[in-house]
Length: 486
Image 1 (tube, rainbow, N blue to C red):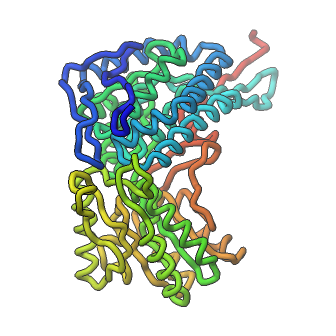
Image 2 (cartoon, rainbow, N blue to C red):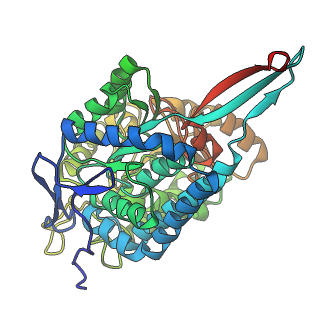
Image 3 (cartoon, helix red, strand yellow):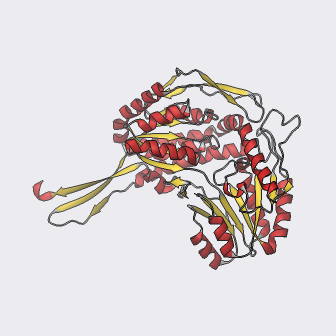
């Protein structure tokens, strides 16, 4: 197989166990590193979405009633196949999304781990028996909700899909997935694995097409009892509003604008390494990416020097090559970065490194941007408040702990946050005061199959991963049993 050749993957919708061509034509899938069309994917609309919902509804009674050991066996098989096919799945992802192959493979393997965890955690969806008077028994049961609608983004086209589908299926639900139109191939590849693993017809369905039409059909359906969405806050708010008419259970993982605080007693070398690793993962196109870097004044000069050196050493290019960062997803992503940088410069910020689109023979047809370090950022600038989905490190100076916490919390988002210190007292105080759903202390790894992932404020609500994630897909039933009348 040639380096730029797409591994074999379907290009159709998957409804009720059948690969089907939708009635809304075909859509090009572009490689953001080259601008080339890598595939054309079938498109559906309201009709196909309703067919998928009906298939999921019909499959639900048998899937929820299936012996738990059988469901677990299928989910474990899916995990195994994801591992076995990780190289091909990673290449598919890199060709449609752009991230380096190593990152893409890590995402696929993370999805395999998620399916394995969900399979085992399904065994621990314990109910409850509550002491009751007069010959009664109070029983609390945890049951699957029913049909789940899942909408996933382009930045983690495999990881976001597996993180939603694994717990939904493990809990006994059926589902309809709508992946991003920019990166549908990774989701399709997962559905091919579902088919190979023996997932019964109708249990998982895949529709692709216009986001507003498909999203509106999912939210309007009374048969869809749960909606899970990862994406922008604006779209999440719209889906939340639409879902109110059918009173769905809903979970939203929305925008982020993570603070990254470096206190004067931190290990600067380690903090700089973690910052560069976290910031340039997926080229900054990550909801938990550090977006506001607060550095204590006494160590600002030393830390800035370290960061600039490490960023300068990064290699950017086609994800199929040996690179540290790939392209951005589209041209409009570059436009937004340039607008933020121009606003910051006008208000006193200085570009220490980068700040421009990458040009040259290797970059001209793709969406590449120079890794950038921006200094002297203040609360007067747009970049302080608006999420940057790209390779920019904005440096902000602070003097006291209270100042750092105040500025870190001066944000409508509340997804991820990070800080670096050697002080145990500071660990307790700062982690308590940061208004974020997740806090990394001397660490950036905040997403694991076993631990809850999610935010507060305008970053949404609900959790993914861990037993908290699985319980997003169940409903509680109370049974009051009167033995005296039995």
